[in-house]
Image 1 (cartoon, helix red, strand yellow):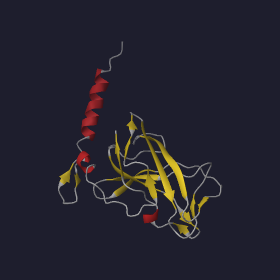
Image 2 (cartoon, rainbow, N blue to C red):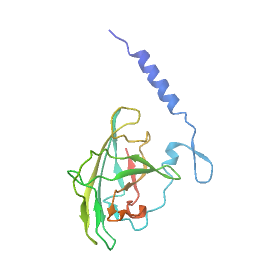
Image 3 (cartoon, one colour):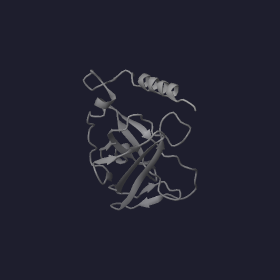
Image 4 (cartoon, rainbow, N blue to C red):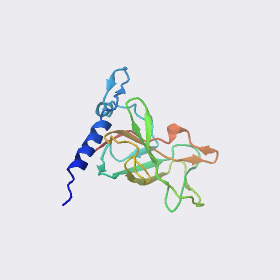
Length: 182
């Protein structure tokens, strides 16, 4: 019979070592833990064109994957048609996490190269879709990766939205802020 006792001790030692990172600084310069950083509320998005259906979602996390489902609606508030990249379905948005002072990219969906034309969204029109995120935990060989070890916190979606002249301005591609819990 094989014993796992030594492996368990090594696993706990690694977890303890990883948890002793230096704390982040809060906006007032004091040190905060990852849990406290998740509680520092970010600034609200002014007049978001991407709006989620709720302000809080529950992620499921296991040893290898993080899963999150976020329904959203994009409304073209501009005077010109906007475009969403398309390859068998509209390209899903990216996900950003508030780290207490900045927005950081934590999920960028993997896309195959595709020559399909983009989906046009006329002025005033809306597109309803859902981000179905299934991402690997950091440190593995799988893609896409959810780039944060600490899941609970404030998030927003970042869409790849464009117009004939190029990508829409950043403020026209971000969603409202929402919380993710586990």
